[in-house]
Image (cartoon, rainbow, N blue to C red; front, top):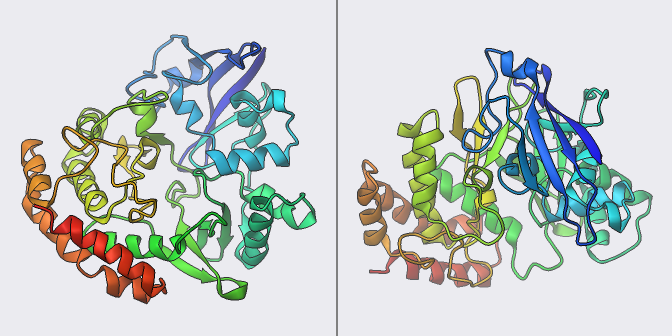
Length: 400
């Protein structure tokens, strides 16, 4: 049996113990029972809010699950995905029998993205973070390359184990800071077949021109002519604290394999979002952009909500890329299937879903993506790759 306290760092920097979670010992298949409940102090707080308005309502109730499945996916949101979990395991030397969510939550110690942190009973969160200084960017990139190549951990990897074990996603990355703030540094992977760093910068720039809200970003040079993509963190509040983050995977209770539509995300925003009149058209615009640039990796952990004093609102768009895997089929379904319609079909879907100005949104995305080649060249994407993705995007934007 393991017990952990759930702490929340608020936007103003205050820290509150808001819940308790208990994990049974795992069986031989690694399955374990989990139970969560809010503290009475948090339930009595007039400023309290639910960690997940759809599945973890503020109530004196014990929420149970197997492992950290629904309805407890909002707690699993605090953990990084494949890359960060691997580094957590290496950093804390977790043996195979302890490489599960309870031990990873305890190892992360509240230094992930968002406001949630989990600690042994009686232990309070520590101030500070594990971010590396930006001047260490070359060392971080070199350490990431060594680990991806299967080399042994040495002193050169220590800074990465601290700074790289928090972000989500499967690609090498780390949390860094400079005098201008805190960033997620994203590195090239040895598995990349194209310049994904340059292509992601291109997609972010085009998304901004198309009217999407995206985080501030820039390319940073590395030794040997390489680059890293720096993306400003949006979970950090201007007051010095943090904002709670909730994925659509958790909100929609989507365990394991799921078959969900963009319409399901829009319906959830209308029901649980604080500003659906802003966020619903923004999500539709992101869907159109994903469809026409070919961002097929549109799974539910690439869509998040941020909580502020007023309620839950859509985060800026992130993890945007053309179809680098040549998949063509998307994770999310547009209407009846995972292959998106062309511009006229996307506009028709918007009108069907009650999106004001759907046709104008589609037209702006189409006209913006017509400038893909010029934008990609400005970010140093190799010309053969520019031509490959230009042709793919033109096929999409010219589809009837």
